[in-house]
Image (cartoon, helix red, strand yellow):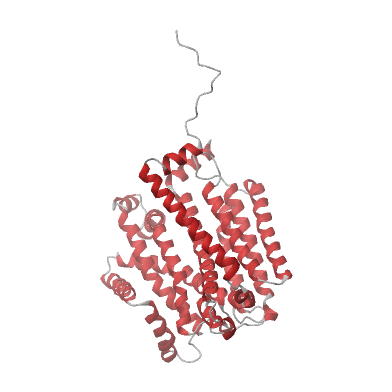
Length: 422
């Protein structure tokens, strides 16, 4: 006869309380406890010193007086409504994508629609990315615009999350077309055309120029990198060796050297009417430079696949392009995704070299501001703001990469398929 369980004392759960778990992880032994105390004391001292400097010694007037220059450079004041419209459209698209991705079934054995860590990180990123421009502007009107844009993002996200499951599954892939269309609309709004007054690239600057250069290079270097990776593995000697020579030459040359070559040589080789603007010359150089590194990342993904994948696809009656498109490349790109996104982040950081060729990107604007006699010695404040802005952009790419990896996980796809059939 088995003893009945003691109902007066509830059984302990499988997971220990949070305090016990922290003690086990941070104070498992006397040495671990000493290391934890030393690290916490060091972090507390650093945080205290930083807060004391930021609140008493730092002079943030250099940021407030030049916030417009940091954001958009010398963009005409009377045409800045276009940029506000573009930011509004980006906020609405971000909220729509975020809400729909949360609403549609996803990868989780626990049944949640979004990894909790990604939710917290995305919320913090959104708060920081909107608080920083808000803190840098002194006009109440500009502050209200940022508050309204933030409210729009959250409102669209909530609406999409609520009514997202009502969208037919056949229409869900069309969400991917939203961002290319929005990118084209954004370029028209920034540069002019279709009835808008043209704004030459020479008047772009600051964060606007940095994001335009980086986004242009990222969008074009990826397909070029895939083609180069396939060319390097081709059986045609001319195509294979041409890809090898291109990749090795680009990887062996410093980016700053290629930027100077692009700025000077293209102006001599092409007629005056065909030579692109200096901004677009730099954008193409960044594209061709990053494509070589993306090609190596994709080639690593192709090398990680067993050769039987291609042979199995060919045995099913698929020709070579179909086998690559439907069988080989989806698996290889999933393997190469972390390295590829890492290259995108590096490319975004490499845009700081544009200031060395005379373009007013974020670093170029910062050097111009710090050269002003009225703001001498305010280097720490300027570089701190630049670091925050770059961190926000890089963290956004990192979050997108993690979410995409989670969705492309084969276990996730199989789990969602079985759940949909059930």
